[in-house]
Image (cartoon, rainbow over all chains, first blue to last red; front, side, top):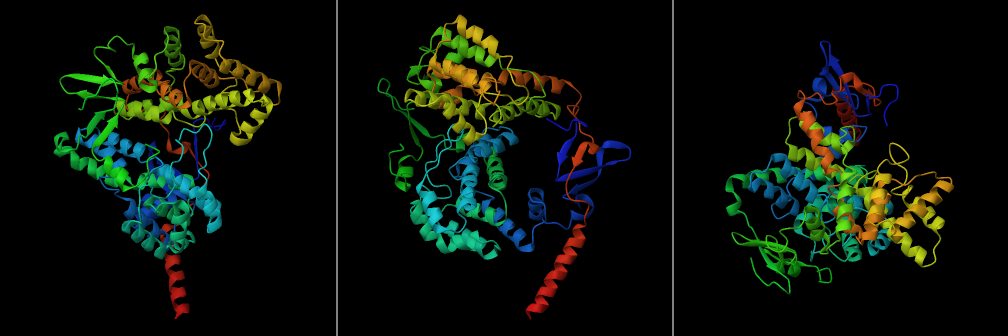
Length: 268
Length: 288
């Protein structure tokens, strides 16, 4: 359960703190992976460098930081049509708490359609298939299901858009930009083989698929990629939730429900 | 819907409109809940009855509903140490709202070692195994395959102790209600016997017992998963209330020294930047 000699301690390879002399609960210095956060990193480290360092044992190279920053820009706002942002706006429009709007965005944006778990599954693909097109073809042809999973069965190949007709320009632009600044193997390979991959998947590449390749190129595990995808899409959800708040529910689409019931046929 | 061809046409058909069998409300007039007027046809329904009716569109007997109530009651522990409860309590201690704390605590209850993650695996294993045995399968082989897939049998063994104080109470109730003779419950005991007699030595815990009773009531895995959502709920609010009543920030405060650091030694960020610049400079010169 915990360290038996010191049962109240928290083990960490990420973070260490030194207390003030007059207060064991006040931080005099904090170290992230050995680097002095407030004494040295602050004012010198980019936000994406700190982000990378929290998840990985070493700081990113300049090109890795550039790639993560470009990816963060691409993911920052899925836009108000996206289901996760829609969920956040449902919180904002009726004056729900700020945290509930973000929790709503996280819950909806966690799924297997453009969400965190889709990125996780797509990253498992990179771990399993790498740059082997035949392995990808085989994987994309099979929809794997884990018995007894809390996650619903997959309905489309992870990383691809089930409702897409052709690759969206925004996806192509993101792939092109990220591939040009990646020092990894997956993004450039994906760019070269996107048509073959899309043919194997039966639908066009989605932004989640590009994000998964980028996270894999940065050396993140599928679990880390899933977490970062959730995190990096929150700024847009927050901004749109706040934007809707003063507009109010009357200016927010309420939708129509048409009851499908043989005994009761009414329209609300 | 799943039989329809995906694509923009399918999305276009659904813009702004939802065709629903579940219900809707007519402001100022009435509400339809799964084809019934909530305030007329269903007004006398017990809340749990309405809850499972909403999930399943089926009615359950008084005995089954009584058991469902107790399934939740017997596992509502107001113990702040439990990880999900602690989330609710930390929200109280940090002076967040009760709704946020409890909602997050419920979300956390979908864990892989307890709660919904285990519930789903437990009912799936019981239903799948029963089917395999009916087709002539061997129980020990089913257990071996499950262990190979998941490295554990959901509902057997326990994170804290091997054994479960809830089981005898719920079993006694199930017996008194005549709900203890179902095939999934019998299978759950047969699995326990096999696990205890083999090298695994794992006792049945509440998750397997409740999954077996749920399957015997006729719940599908998804229905069971949704039914179990509030299972721990009643234990959470007391944790939030007590932490809110205490001085702020006093729930398990952690002094700086109680982070047992096991990572990299102290190193210089600015020195790293300097050496990276120097390496880049040398690289540029050598490339000229």
